[in-house]
Amino acid sequence: RQEQFRALRDVEPVTRDGHRISLLMNAGLLVDLPQLVESGAEGVGLFRTELQFMIASTLPKLEEQEEFYRNVIRQAAGRPVTFRTLDIGGDKVVPYFRAHEEENPALGWRAIRLSLDRPGLLRTQLRALLRASAGADLKMMIPMVTEVSEIQRVRELFQKEVQHLSKFGHPLPKRLQFGAMLEVPALMWQLDELMQEVDFVSVGSNDLFQFSMAVDRGNARVSDRFDILGRPFLRILRDIVRAGERNQTPVTLCGEMAGKPLSSMALFGLGFRSVSMSPAAIGPVKAMLLGLDVGKLANVMDTALDDLKPKMPMREVLQRFAEEN
Ligand code: PEP
Ligand code: MG
Image 1 (tube, rainbow, N blue to C red):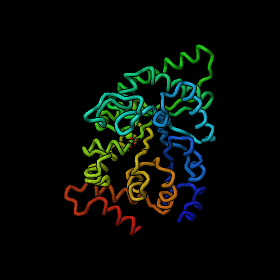
Image 2: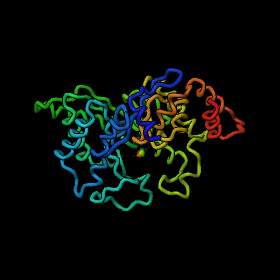
Image 3: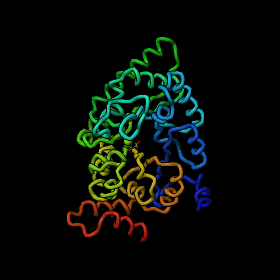
């Protein structure tokens, strides 16, 4: 089967009924990057920048961060990379950055909250990203956004860095794309403001599922208690896709569910046209989508999601569709 997936590496990901899908991969270290060519991914849809911080013994300096991002961009050799700003805290522990013990770290001082409270840390990272992508495209996104105002505050810091660099004659990126991760349910009621504010939205389904269903993603007793392919979560995802269409804002998804063929099939049925996953999943997902009639699946899913007296769990609806089509 490995061989069979390898043969698909250079095949364009187009569904049977003609929809082009972007298959991207998740990464966090330089050793991940050869997988771009290996897997045939179109680019890196999620680059977890905290990995560099997690494996270091002290806070990486500006020059080290810049050098690292420069290497990532060089190795990506023209394929787009979406850098996520630091997502420290929660399940991502940075030993020398020991915050206070927290009773609920997933709900605690983490990700963008921590970055906004330590603006020096964030500005250093933004400066490193700007310098590393001089003359190229810079695509970046913010983790764990809860209110749109947090994005505006990051933009202000970003503008300061841009001004600082141009004052000293540093070349800037050719183009900037600025995105938000959708991981906190409160954003579901700010979708239109959010999408007017950013260039793209990337659903972090691991966290969005954890917070929507109130199940700790790291606690095996509860993490699988509810089905990620159940109606509640699929309806949430459908609302996000609809908001993206309404606002003409590109929407992508970079959680683990994108890497499971049945789940990614469901995502395409909901209208996602871009997903990011572990490199090993690209082949199996591509094999699935080449034979998929997305239009037909969309109808089946809409009907099943609107059914107020369903006779079948959504997972079964999807499995049957996969077997019969
Ligand atoms: C997610 O939450 O789905 C996500 C992609 O980010 P992480 O797994 O790094 O929290
Ligand atoms: Mg997350």
